[in-house]
Image (tube, rainbow, N blue to C red; front, side):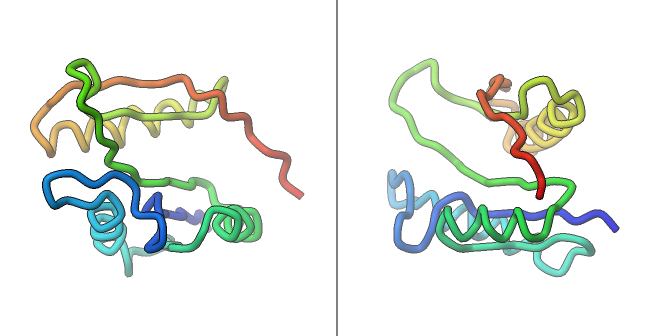
Length: 123
């Protein structure tokens, strides 16, 4: 059975970006909470090293980390999607998720980023 692991990006200790009374962690945690109870979805909310250990133990088909980001630069806006280099399925998932988020939020722009992420060897 497939498993999807979702993480709210930051932690309660390191909350990420804060602006206009909004806190990145709180927004991302709220999004992750909406996924609780869905079949094959596990939400993990731990520090990064523990998160990596859990993901390596579970060996999910997909691991998603939610971030909202913040920038005052005029050209840094919209939905960003990172995906595994040279992994077509990862790119397709990133396009699907980012497109859905962009549509839901009112298309503020959509950018895909070839992340320098390489798949780690599963044990």
